[in-house]
Image (cartoon, rainbow, N blue to C red; front, side, top):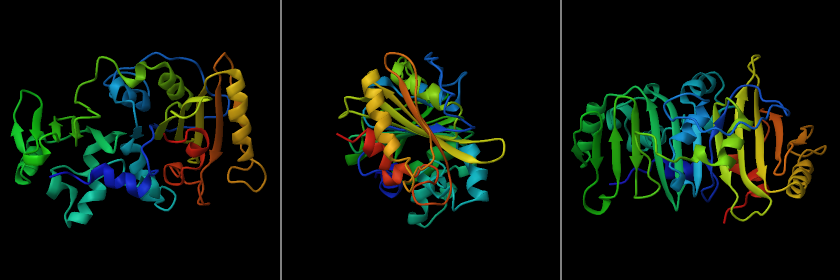
Length: 320
């Protein structure tokens, strides 16, 4: 048996084809990008989005990487659900799936939304793997899965659960701090950090550094673009409580950066969706291009709205 999970979530709130994602928080301005591209440990230092990238194997970078700081989004969505409607699921597939099954997340899966502090998902070739961090009862989660027909193998610190019959490739890894669901053989996430991760890729490190300390982010790969190597959009909360998002595009050359900036400036003209936003070109041989806008209830301007509309991703990083 296979969880509708993030595959269903993707159909509800994402673009029609997997792209690549992660999340932002804070108050990034148009001049806040820097060039520190050092990889961070999945369990150690760095911003939440850097730790999220460090948990994703480099080989899994082929579709979409999404990051949600569930603990930070939870009070935001509770206070203003209309503004944060795209993040109300907190990056937890079971929070979307369980109502369809007529039961709660705890009753069906052995944990609650409040147990989760962050979510990382990787989508490739129509399959989505999810890594949740938080505080969990691994035995309780395993019992719920066994009731649904899964088989569990107990370990010292990690319980491994696998499907049966046609779903043998579906697996779970359960510990007191991490819950991983792999619905297929790839992409493959784990409770432990990989030897080489997406955070070791200079383009991802550069984009993550540009985004800064964010509460949600999406990294979009740009396989069909010669100008953009990688694009990311993430959201921050200023000290005033004001929500904003920043787009960071890693370009291939100075000429490419100018072409990307020109496209974005078409979206910032009077009457356009992002009117009034400033587009900035960074320094170096492969400059970053970045743009920040304030979130509001207007069409296309809610946090994570580009995962639904695809307006900016399709402009700069069209799917292959």
